[in-house]
Length: 435
Image (cartoon, rainbow, N blue to C red; front, side, top):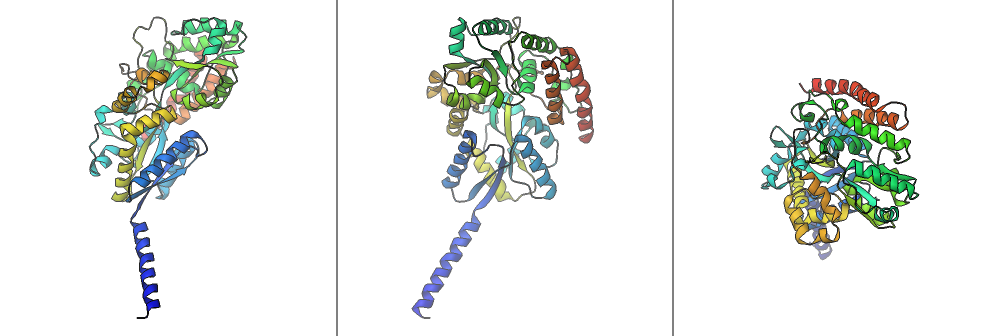
């Protein structure tokens, strides 16, 4: 063989070897709802890059699928077409759809099969409960938050509010002082069905639905129209009449903008709002726990928001092993602490929380600890979670009826009754699909 031929042979062998090496890396496709243009998406991209660089066996391939609703819809369509990703980020209202489906593999099974020993009891209880079913851990908690009361400390000082409101009565009095001080919108809220309704029922230990809000079985019925939530709804309607509260839209952008430009001085919003608030608020701000009723001496845990990571059925074991390795990477105390700092979401484990305390993080950002403390209050059957079918559609109904209250088209009781009347047939229909 001539030297030139030898050179070509060696070069060809090297190309073949490189191709073989590339093929040996197992791709793990992860569909998510964090735009790569915002901070959350950039942090997630960094995590995937760090994990991929840490080993040679697996590659996390991120695909942004749009909103939470877009992501679950795309996942369902992909499962039906046999083109499902390995990992799908699924938000709370859509969790029952996957838990009761035959489309997922329990995450505890995958972690055990891959050889990882996970101390699930070291995860924060309300965070885990959302994704548990019949003793199995169906998904890995990921971005977890809960609402807090964010406030403009400069506005409070201007209005002469010496103590941060702890009760709804206190907030009423503070809102009137803020109005007198020239603030057009003393109070607003984001994610109204989550904050105004669901979290109120949790903190006040009121049933949202029967059968422990569906946690004890899918054949549950909405029941919040018969609780003191109706009085709460009537209170906020009264605030709107008095110019103390403004509706800024169903999600978060309107409320945030009104808070940033100092139109609204108080914003009931997710703890995960910290990232945006810290970057955009040009005033002294802080946060406190959600208000409680004056006679509530033992407030319960609030309801989590955010999403978990589900594993789709029908894939090869190396893919699941790669997903398990990535989950183990994400769940480490160090990564959860980093996530907590950079996203505003709470850490999912007690170990990560203790690491944050050890590092002195809460000495500098004390409000970041509030969400964890609020979540770690003693739960009851009314506060372990919400697991109701077709909740995405039910939330749409709730939002429509809340808007009828804000626009004075309906009384609080009429709207609450209509939420239940319209929502229960959807729950019944879902229950029949999983019998």
